[in-house]
Image (cartoon, rainbow, N blue to C red; front, top):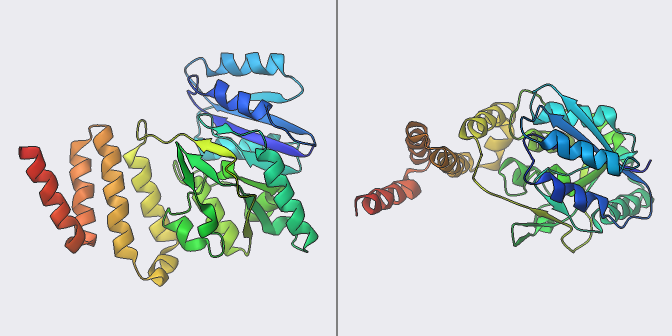
Length: 290
């Protein structure tokens, strides 16, 4: 088996058919499988996945687990995978037809140049909703862009030999958000190379604030600030980054009507970058009164 596509899923009934259809529609010269790990869905996700497994047994395996979070689901994918190469697909996103082939060809090209399989992750560019994401701007020196969220650490845009996962280690189950960014940071710090795979977008990521947890995002921020503090300080603009990030997290809380937490995070944003965010806050307050 060449490739395993890992799909962590939780209450994904509204979108997982699109994801599975796109994975099944790959134009790829070798063999691949699709492993869906269901993190204790409470909707009809299991029924949909079992139906697909019944209809496409040569491609799809469905595994259900007790609720443990997306990092644990990814670790279960790694245990179940039969492929020599691993790639990912979120249950609410979609591949374009040549995604696997594009990732795979980029890895083979770098192997022919002498890089070891444990050193390479290929990354395709993609659309976030309808906007093209230009990942090529970040891959020469990806550590800061990953830690600052400029290069979104979406694992489903990558492919890597299973040796990468053996050498870097499992996903951190203590993170309810950002386990992908943490993995890629560890990969880069260990000397791994993120390489561009083609120039044409090969996926679409559907982004929405709906369902995003401010609490999980804030926990990720705090964990990363502790774990990678020396790197954030070395970049020289830590407070500006924190101000931006706290303002984003405040929007997550606003979406979920967590007003106290929204204002607390906006206050932290202002604290870290007073000159920029105080005028912005005053404009918002003025608009809310009108």
